[in-house]
Image 1: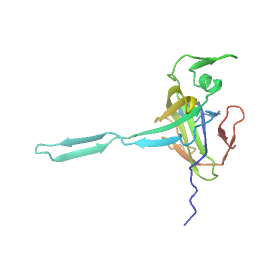
Image 2: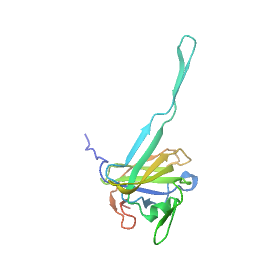
Image 3: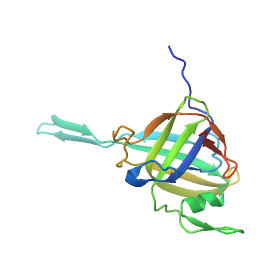
Image 4: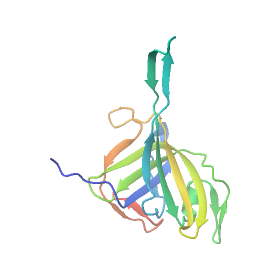
Length: 183
């Protein structure tokens, strides 16, 4: 049996505006410092459709596609995150938060620290932002990426929702904080 390479522990989360034809963004930026154990990718089952005939007999049923959501908490987010998402204007002195609504769609890449562990590339995602402050976490932004179906295709023209990709490892991001995928 081949040795399992676990994707747990430290990871890099990078985002960029979705490309043409819903392609993965070519320029990705670290979201910043992600709180320990806050990054998740979860799926939820879709709706179940069922039709019954007289007498309660099931004559047809179908399960709809569910949802996939990637979430994380960015601690002490910098000016770069607010401007990248288009929700704030940064000056030398402050950040003028203009909205928590992100208008554009973004690509998200999650890269595990361990080389060979499976990461995720989601070319087209809606973004939800919830900013806050607490005594425990200080300033933070909770990011939630709803993975969307789109026109994206792999190198062979096959359509896909999101892609599982092997990690090449991560390195510290000295500009935005946090980590980024090794090139």
